[in-house]
Every structure is written in structure tokens, then in C-alpha cells.
Image 1 (tube, rainbow, N blue to C red):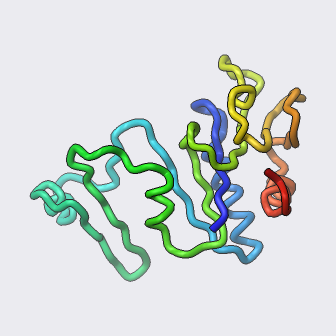
Image 2: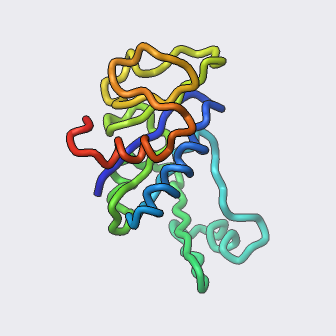
Length: 163
């Protein structure tokens, strides 16, 4: 399984880029999974639903299954947040995993940075950033892609020896 990360500051366009890359890689016949990291409490379940009641009653994991998809909700119940490596191990087989977030993990990453950002780019402090997606001319030592050139970004990801 190959992993590429998308990192950047809040509102830089990480989710837009991640979704576009997933769409592009999938359209090329590749199987793509994704992991999205959130820094806040995330709940995909709603109070009052049966699965919520199961979790609320104390179940550590609840699988909600239907004819089109299933979801596994895992309650940490005070345990440490799983590492990216632990989450990757839980995924099914695929060609690529697009990871949004997990800035500090050393997997290969593409940073999204906007000219109007009040924060400095991450790449000067992170050797695992292998490319930059920006809306300005940047002094990044590696490839810099226009935010709208998704095919070129996908070509780069798929090229051998990129890291």
C-alpha cells in the first residue's frame, strides 16, 4: 500500500485537494482509501439512532452495515488516539491511501499553502514534504504545482522515485 499525505494550515484547501486526488487516482483504475485526521471530537453518529444507543451503552466497537456501505465506530474510552500506522493497518487492501492531516508523521506529504495565509509554510521544518501545491511562486526546493493542476499532481504521486 502506498501512502501520500496532504498537509497544510486550516482553510488552505487540503480537503479539496485530497478529494480531487482521490477522484483522479480512482479514475485511473486505482483503488484508493483515505484517512482524515481531525483535531476535535468527531462523531459520525447521531443521538437517538440505534448505533448511538449501542455505543452509549458501552460497546467499544459498533459496525453499522447496510446494502451500500458499512462503518465501524470505535470508542477510545480513555485510550490513546491511534497512530497513523495503527490506522493504516486497519484499512482493507488498496493501491493508495490519501491521508489528510497527521502533519507530524514522517510519511511522504504534499503541502498546500496559500499566498494569503498568515502562517508560514510547513516545508522548511519538515523533510517529509515532497511537493508543494500553491497559488504563488514559491522557493520550495522540490516540485511546486498549481492548485488546479490535479492531473500533474497525480502523475507526480505515481512517478517512481519521487521521495
